[in-house]
Length: 238
Ligand code: ADP
Ligand code: MG
Image (cartoon, rainbow, N blue to C red; front, side, top):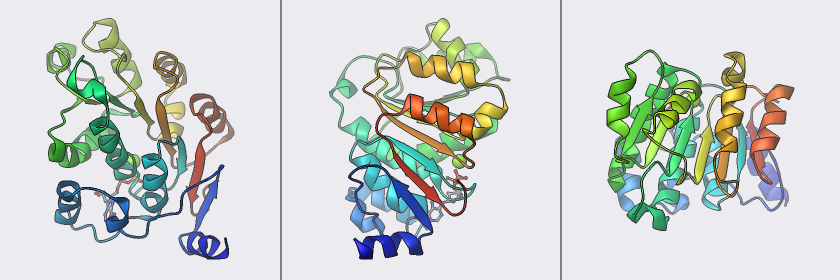
């Protein structure tokens, strides 16, 4: 309706997809429990960023997302918060091993940033996070993953595949997948690894893909790895 269009115009937001829920303008409307809200408030966040306002309620509905917003717009929390809620809802949480939430990032630095940010919120639920990336000893990462002592795994595509080959981890329980900075993963030549990882995760997973820019090649991959996605873009970014 007109009011919704006006809200989105004010947020400089473009949304496409069928039956999309309205954006939430404040943290109180996300329906988070007290421990997560407390953690958010303690960080000094007073209001969700534009991408968070729309992506969080859409992800909480279980929908796939293609999110496009520039660097610094708060994309990490936009996928971490719904991922935590998703994990807490899974029966698999009580049994089995291997991550339920998996995040792909293009570089060691980004994987580490996501790891640090996600730990701030995962601790509210006692969920465990690990990060794997190149340029650090494989054995240390191997030990951290064994025997299935984590629920959330962040990794660069190459090292993640190495860890699966070494049987340090597996994708059997993964039902929430995030591809972060998809454009940079392309620039760094990780497209084959990203595809191979996506092909090895159950197709009924929830998939969120984020990118700062949205060139055609990223769009093609995004359409392939998501199902009936909601596309959310903030600002003049494609
Ligand atoms: P992006 O992935 O879009 O580049 P980040 O997720 O790294 O952005 O977030 C950028 C910075 O903004 C981080 O320091 C993060 O802690 C902070 N941030 C995230 N959400 C909010 C919010 N709602 N209010 C204030 N700061 C936020
Ligand atoms: Mg980011």
